[in-house]
Image (cartoon, rainbow, N blue to C red; front, side):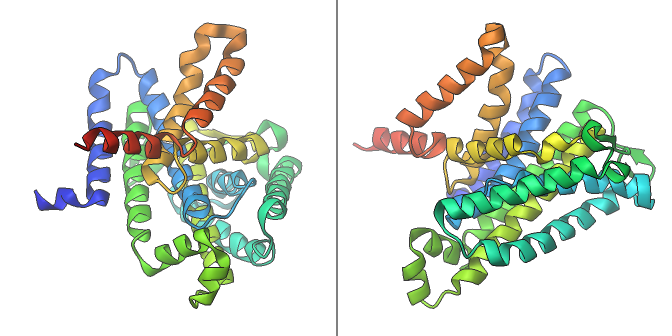
Length: 315
């Protein structure tokens, strides 16, 4: 079929088939849970990939927006009487507004200055969440109300598998189509050279801010989804280590690649599960695998694999 020649459609079809087929090989409900975590992390990584892979900007505090989304669905029902499904878009709008306000000054920075500024933002969000215990439960976190839609309650690992899988496909579809819009082309121009983009008539400050806001909304929605799935949220979701994990997913999978963001999330979520056989050496093995992967696959897993397949296909 002709539409399969479209790389965007082919990418979505591949992931849709994988999501539909995986339950056929799951030996227990535990695997539904792990796969759902991959989907949620992949969704957040797709948004961060828009900022880092397409627009070429660095963020080491992106988990702050993840935490805002997660606490929105916790605080909304507990303190404001707002249902989780209604609190989810409220958290996304709040994250977008905060990204706009914070992004205007810090996105004027470049390189490691920008990285440190975003790191400071993430640490500030985590600090507020930890100290405002009356609203957030403090370091111990707080429970999250069950998602209820028209009397139907979203419970069980298999249910959240399908919900998170559908959300991932929607997020991938939006990101893939965004890349082909004038905004997406402006992102890529900015990534290649800010000077050249400015000479071409692109409003560099505005484009940076757009990418930052898009990435913040993705992270917030992912945070809301994970909080509802777990039924609990704590400050770790907004912490620095979680920001590093998200960045690692994007870089490991392949900067600029939507498929790479998902693959990077899959690798980083599933590897610790597979390495439990090494017991106390689990973290050492995980770090070693990531280091070796980045040495031999500098462009990331997906771009490297695509390049190797293209070489094999040549006569």
